[in-house]
Length: 226
Image (tube, rainbow, N blue to C red):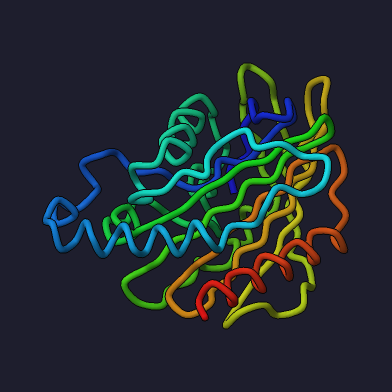
């Protein structure tokens, strides 16, 4: 997973996904029937987003629309262009890949919260059929990148999180280099056709807290799904 500088908390942060250019969004979304269905889906997804945790404020969203067209997705692409990865194949690994046309045009909702010590970004994407990001490739467990002129080393390990939804995974990434070090906890889970992504950024991310956030997010998604 690619980690990039410049998140709302001032720490090193991951791109929320591998964004797609506008041309990747299917034109069928322009039809009245498709727009109505998409609006209904995004409304349900927005309702399933977590509220702001205590002590945090909204810094982005809630934003809804086709996943590839969201501002958060496009910003991730722009940030990724600024980083020079030792292993380019690790960009977006184990995350939602918005370069896939079906995913780029899928209804989505995103929100981001921040405090003085970190940030949380949540994304929900409703896919045409059940799909789940592949596990992190072995070669992406440790690699280096140039981020804004700074050499940064990323080390990622999979966490033993209790299963959430139909399938789920969690990772903890430590970014070291420059004046600041940071950790990024990530949770990705699928419930039916909806994939949920959580990114928690801070100087230190506790797995127990990440697991609890994943549990709350999954419960909210299940409630919204009825």
